[in-house]
Figure (cartoon, one colour):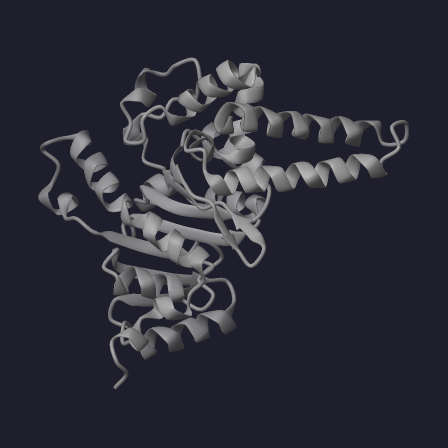
Length: 298
């Protein structure tokens, strides 16, 4: 029998994965509050607290194990499209004696999930375009999924813009720097009960939401202190995250400084006539970076 510390899956996990799990912890209250807000006369069984989580692309199953082991989720379904990783996840789940609370399931995204089985989701370590496809292939509302932590590896600006277009709320976002790479996990609310407005012109509903009017505050800050237009401010929030900007996250500062160095190096290597379009893109990105540095860090 191993001692207690050795039996914690956290000892095998990266900082990125632990951060993703801990971000989901706050979703329990959000989900319960959203249910309570719909109707005080909701059936009693719908008010039973606790997260039930689908871990999509579970790989080794550590996220599911951590969520259950640390009482973040009551139960989990570890899902993967590949049989090999799913078998490995099952072995790990058995090793930690959690097979009674964590199920493994072969599935392409959420396709094999049944209605009401879970109320939250974790999808991490995939490209933004693939993650978007997985969300589009599922009816989150019908499945009963109200919140989740999403961590795209690429296309961050397009992915944040997609979430806004769907009317989802980015309730929180972190930055993790590990092994020379930056990661941006996001706590996202899918539940329509929050009344997320798809229009930036309509802010009344946003101010009453769990996360407040973070996006609008970030846009106002960028416009007032960064000297950018509202359109550019929204593009900046899509590219770098409004929570990171408003909190003046020190890792964001490092990320921006590094990005500026890379962009300036690229500009030196481009011919202004042969690469005019690319030069324009890089200069726009530098403008965005300098605007954030001016608005949030000066």
